[in-house]
Image (cartoon, rainbow, N blue to C red):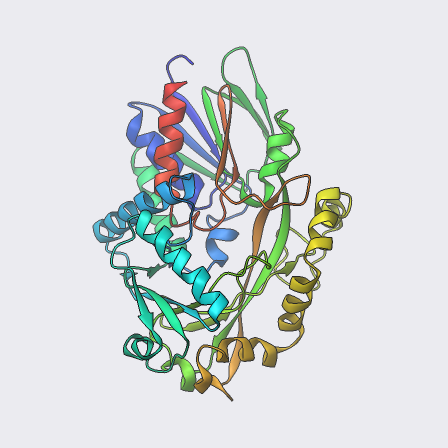
Length: 399
């Protein structure tokens, strides 16, 4: 790759905007352009997640997630302090309710320690109440540094930096194709085409389609799963101080209901996880047939579905019954019985899936000459966004 003067980033979520800012900071005199198909930034996963800054408890030591999560936390903390944005280290408990869960929790503690997560410790049943007076369990892992933020506000502040360095953000501009030339890449939108020296695609829920349009393999394929959050009524909100999570169960692909304090003081229950009728569908009636056909005709989805019937039953119960949702939360905080619960936000996660139906766990960042494609950036994607940006730009400049 020759001198990089013109860069494009496809996608105006937190990762795309962080990448644009990093390019503007690292490349002297480069022109950086963000293309976002919606009329605002952070319209999809960034604006519909729980707002948690993950500390790095669960990830395979040495993997991209573990490395970029820890670095991402440092960068987010510094950025929020510099921009006077809220950053609240409210802490998190992962609570074990059975002997089997205790064993898995010990393994998570070993991982968290290997990943250098600050302050993590194991608590017995009595010690849980010192952190969360209304919570119960056999034992728990306490991560005091796990924090909450406002990711859309962070995205806006990152975008302000992009503009301040001379970059441009084009809203309402859907990228339809990326075409590698002898040198550089042509970006096509409905309004025409432009040539750039480097293109980074951070297209989230559309990442596989854009990758395929550049000649990359069709898999991993994005299969959309919605997650519904509920909000605890005012009278019950004080029952929980921070974040309370279950121990992940290897038999289920998704975590299950947990309690999450939000930066505005609301307390969320959720999310559940169930197949979505569209990649960007935030209501039951919003059915997008192209998206449904996409996974209905994908053999990997049916392999996944066959293996996960018990999980689907569990999740569907929380979809159709608010009582079931609250009962899940009451396993950890029994005093929530009778609490008022109001519908909260609904998000759609971009779940990358292999052809055999296995879920892609780690971040997947692919390089195709003058194009970098972020093919999988699930949780802790938002936490890691500024570190993912560093990593991508370093890789791009080596090329």
